[in-house]
Length: 327
Ligand SMILES: Nc1nc2c(c(=O)[nH]1)N[C@H]1C(S)=C(S)[C@@H](COP(=O)(O)O)O[C@H]1N2
Ligand SMILES: [Mo]
Image (cartoon, rainbow, N blue to C red):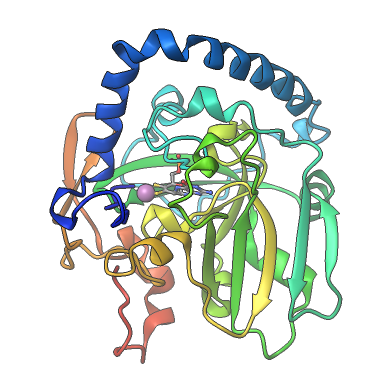
């Protein structure tokens, strides 16, 4: 994501650099004289990553559920992005802040994976992600994806509606929001060793949003279990909102009364808020949201209100006029 790092103790406000610039500068450093000095350290890191990867690649007992039956309620207005493109252009800050994260993400052990469901529920539960998937069952849906950075893609997800997890959890009437949390494992996720991010990654939805049929928990993509860089084994897909709401590699769902603060909101509230619904007419403080780059095609298209999903979700926002719904 394109954020401004707040490291006031290091650099004056005027010199704070947008994320993508910071990254390319670092790459240059590694390519230069720094490369030699870093080599032994990197070698050890790779050996460790290799061991972790072995433990992370136990067989998927649900592999036979893919490809799942396609639900064609949500039609696309553009071709699905080629898998090769989509699997190599990712935002996953736990690993690094470039789009080139696929290789590093392979170090994440995704099996076994325990999911906690807690907070304002009848009874808190902990269950294995594979058991959860088997219990709920899978379907396939093609969704658009619109990152707040003004690019988009289209993806065939496999998964289940978040509403099914909500009914499994049986939340109390006092629950107003669902808060979701990503794993915290700085040993395998180098981005989590960068202390200026308020880890773990957190996101939230209102109960009405979470139980809208469009809110989807994806466990697979392109007809097979999901690649780690997309957020295996469970990630959210809320295609009417900017991509940062679609939290990856979820370990915990908590039902809460207070509105959760997402990681990006904690970091930069003036740019990334709770609602973050896609709206071409409301610019990001630092760039326009009117159009988007369709990754892998070189095309720019006009961005659509609610990313084109208004007929399914616009009703959720009636009577919320005082809220900052669009960023
Ligand atoms: N845990 C976690 N979830 C995350 C992110 C992240 O860095 N960490 N990035 C978000 C952003 S900004 C986007 S655009 C999407 C990218 O999903 P994709 O890489 O599968 O296309 O994931 C979202 N979910
Ligand atoms: Mo994003």
